[in-house]
Length: 420
Image 1 (tube, rainbow, N blue to C red):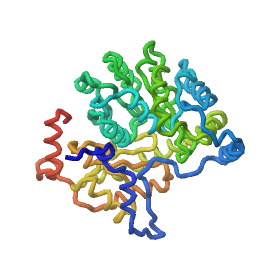
Image 2: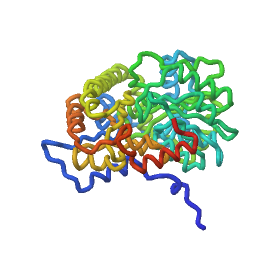
Image 3: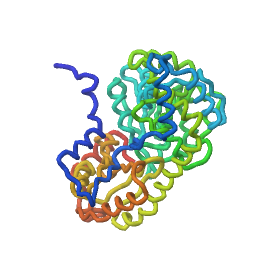
Image 4: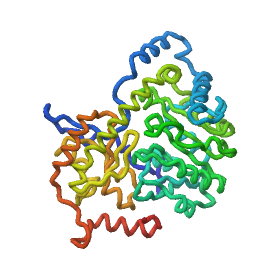
């Protein structure tokens, strides 16, 4: 029997799959496509940053390999930024620069885990995290969240085994939008410390947190540097998605292992992207604050429009950063409804099934709407299109049995001890 390759152990990239739903579909000029499927900003960087990048292209060093762990100047600047934001002492020795935040995660998992090890991943999860764990031979342990999309420490504790190497949290959350309270993060930190495992906190969207100041004080714990690993992305803050620049902030003892991974994959992040990130850190603080204000206004627009959908049976489960995570009222699974939304409503979004194990029935009732690229008026149009849907609604109470696929999923979930 032929064994599977590493890539065959996981699913197809969800965003690419969703884009294929657009094939052959035409959208009239008076009702253009509303694309809320992906969080990446589509606008170019601000003009001053583009000009700085143009100047950087004239420097011969921009076109050469750089240090595997990143430009010293960028590592130092991010350490200063991190120290100021979190009120902690972070140095360049705690910072590694990566080719995007996905690579930061991949590098950390490769540095921490061996074949058959386990990592706890709250559901709904960020699908690229699940994909990399699959391709690494690491077992993903789904950690169900509560009605507020928050993972529970007691549940996590019951899932930890001798093979557990890390717990992964994303805050502000992708896909759920939830901003994890400081006490939740501290409780998971304490749990990880107690068991001698790592707490990986992906803070890609930290620049768009609605809370002012540091969202936690984990770096101030005496044992913090040994337990905590933070991940970051410059892509969202400075619109550098195509230049792939991310970061790891961790105990310096981890970075030699990270360096081995980076050296064999990309050698180093692009010099142009790193120079752009450095210029952004040094010059674009006020501009990023304005971007945050705009995202918070779009978040408010979602909240303002929700009563229209609540009257139709929708529920808002999470809202924050770039994301609104909703429960729909319809009989069919979101996996079938998402392609129909493209054809019948001109809306491209991702179904909750892309963020859940197949055995978890909740995904069939959920959608993620990424609103970073739609303004307040377009959000109103989006809600109008969703409000107008006249699809059959799901049964509630005793009116009838739920769809078979959901019932079977619920049974499977319960048998694995994951039902809530």
